[in-house]
Length: 301
Image 1 (cartoon, rainbow, N blue to C red):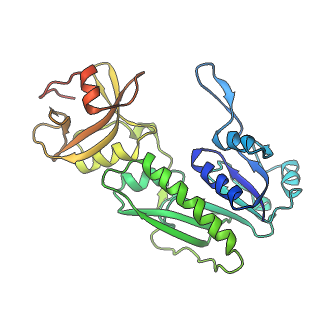
Image 2 (cartoon, rainbow, N blue to C red):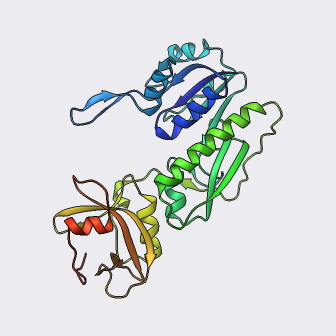
Image 3 (cartoon, rainbow, N blue to C red):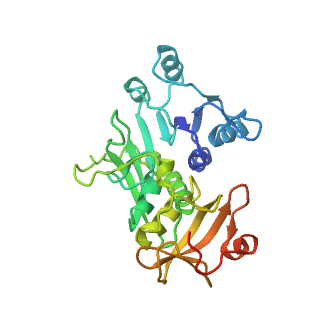
């Protein structure tokens, strides 16, 4: 098929690779404009933009698709279908209507649960037992379109957003290739009206750990916000990100440090900290972290 691909972050790259490997013709890649990054704040292309250039594919980075000129450019590609995954721009109805077979979106949840911006984070933070990916026929509403295909996966007890992100990305890549192969035979299934939840964008104010919360809540917060933005604490004047955790035994006042292994007491029980990062330093496992930043048993965080 003749495909317009629309995506921006690392999550979208395996999907682009899979479409190319399956033999589809990529008419154009749409991505978010380059953003300033790095020490010199030089504008750099995002992961999809970079990969498209490596593949020799044309790339467009409009700031909006609402004006007539941008829509004329899109129309001129005469695409059979558009595949959209974590693109970052709202597609107006005129764009949704242009490809012959419409626009397909890969969404990283089992819709209608976790519509919106941060479905992977929210699934872990809420303690969901499973999640998955859906191939959805796009319409004007926020992730409201009918579902063509879905695939589920269990969420592990020590799963982080980083590991789940990579697994769901690979699942979505395989599933959209299947969807395109069956596009004329699949029956779109309307989403049920019950069970709708919204995965709001992660606010950095959510990321500070409160040891007075139950251990289960703290554990899920740490894993759900790893690697970005990273749950954090202050130890004196030093900010420490907590990037790996598991539930553990422990008693005492909330915030009390326990050792062998490194644990911190919560409202009930404790959380073992497995991966940490001091500001300006590399991520370390707990043992290496304690060599460079000792914490005495009984210390209050």
